[in-house]
Length: 292
Image (cartoon, rainbow, N blue to C red; front, side, top):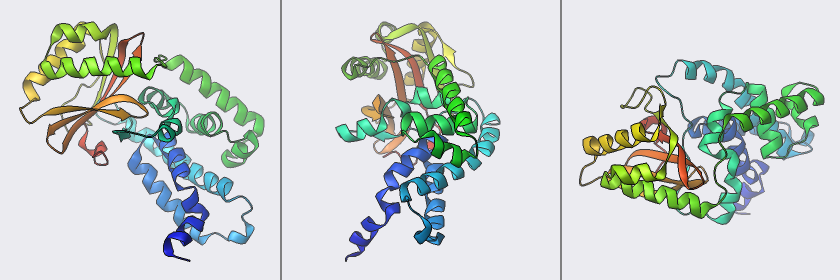
């Protein structure tokens, strides 16, 4: 057996991608999810495998508990964060249909941002049950609650997520068209073209983390947002800057390059009836190290 075959035979390697997806949805951070996977791997190596009947369930429990422990301290850090805290974006230029299906709506920037308002227990129950179809008995054991309590946590979280986020268009082509129009208008500094693609009540969210310049609070309204974008282009764009369309958290978005190969920001969008209703602009360089 080769080293590759041995790795593939290890249940941890078999479920690594799934476990990473669970951790990212629970934490909203690629870096933190990777740290959790590393710790979970160490615990898997130390576990008595003869007593593990269902490796996937065992590993899901380990990852969830590690994330659950992190969520409490993460909430404190994010309350002290400078400006808005947005999830770290997951970017793919040309994802396969399988990858898109794996990402799904549950990983959109809009949903992840709303999930920040949930308690750690609500978030865990929602992600495990509604996204990964884990049964309430297993969730209850993981969270050390009763199955009925786990069911109530998921139900409450589901309602809060539904109420807290505007539901975007389900037509990828319509979403992509709006993003393409926004990108073209942005690159050209075209105020009227921006106004044409923005919902009158559009909300601009930005995350610079105090490292680079970004709004401290959301900006609301098409006129304010369009003028902001034109001003940013005039101030920061150079002949070496460019905008590349990409899939951001499973939906059409864009990557802004300050110069060739240097990522300056990632933008995700919510689109409703052909108009952009929400923008999520991540320019904190610490959240872009994994974007290529």
